[in-house]
Length: 387
Image (cartoon, rainbow, N blue to C red):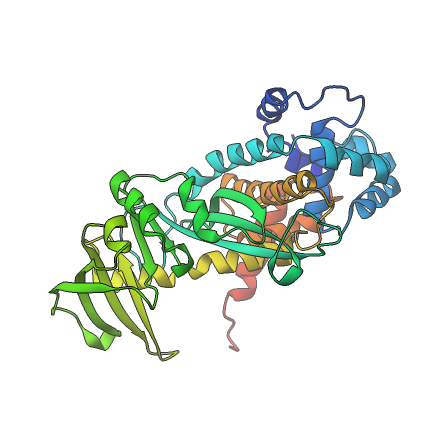
């Protein structure tokens, strides 16, 4: 049982070592290695993410200070900063990316029944967006950004049922967002919600042919003609119009030759007019607006990982090291989500992460640790006679 095990060692029991070793074998990752295998590298980087350490040097320093506990933590041995840095630069990043994809495949079904606020459609709903990590172009010479600065983009498809990332692509800062549409996986009957940076009519038409749906904002220069208007809308909800249109631009009409639906909605709180286009004619106009409103969950996700994982300060300068860093960070997030689901914990992923991060050297069973915290919260929330 987990009695007497450190919390970090308990976390590692949720990691399928066999699946990880399959990823290592696929790319011959442990060829010519002695002690710092891909697994040991992953465990040490995962420790750094879960304990919010800022650098490889901090990881080495912390593990060296607790060298008598390393075996019981599930870590073979502490290594020097230079050894960890060389491994981070040279091990094939695809090993960690493939293992991250495996974690996605087992975590996503666990949250498939999660509700999306104000949405009653049974379709899977994915939000597509990217977040930018600013870097020094002098150190990250490959990571070109805007205005002679360095930057890395993390392009993400987020399943809004549970806020689980399902697709990740890492690029330099000048890589245009809409390029991701050309090779990202598209699932039939799934709704993809994205902002107007992704309006590429050729790619959107490919979605239509696959049988997927999209909801996005129209660009200001879109040229179109209205062919049908739905007058059965409630303007008290903020809806202005619900129309069927065809594109009449010279290029756009060829790239997307079939009708689109255009929904115009006024955000009363911010007093702004929003124009949405979609290929879904079955949802209500208000559902289309609410779908786009829920797109902001991906913005919350980006903010969360930047605040709670070590992702704004990267642990290596090469493209390979950056890929490893980001995939290990996302694996830490997915692993915490997996633990939350498996233990049926009602705390949020953020709360579980906070508890685990400060309890790495504790020997309390994880299930008991999370249950006790949740029980204490319930006791505090109960009203007293003097409330």
